[in-house]
Length: 200
Image 1 (cartoon, rainbow, N blue to C red):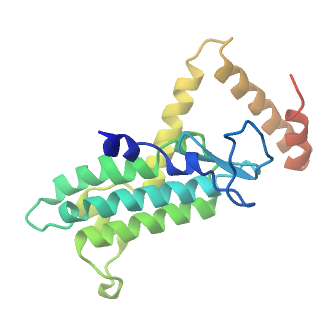
Image 2: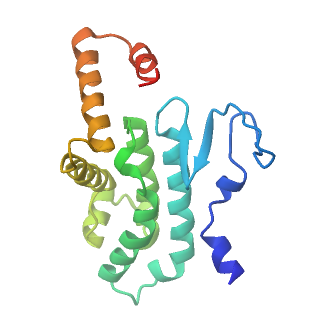
């Protein structure tokens, strides 16, 4: 039973990865960190999703490698392999992506990781010159970026349906005002983020 329990615990939570090395908080001391792991998600002081996307790609790749014997078997139909990939590898790659501030570099990294997995599932090498879109059509897979956008829109819909006094909805409306102010004034994001870091 202990082996099963250990497999569900995030290793990064025991030894948070930071730019300054490993940090221990067992003795109650706190430290300033650039990034740390919280419940499996990497939180970054810059507010970008780079560290989280890297961690999620790593998690999805590890999940995929565990399922390679099933995902690459030719006697299993492509539909079953696609469902297995969607429910395990792709879900672990996109876990928590609803709130990521995604940039183009993050999207490219996710697409490259998925393309490697799809080629491996279809037993197609880069030298075969088969387009990735054709391989995804073969498996019946949607592009990972469109799945990411669907997840974000679904979360956005849930946030809008909350009560007006709910914390999520209040924060959402506050950020919309800030983004509108940034667009109108064309001020730098650093100035806006320093205004939001002040206590409420």
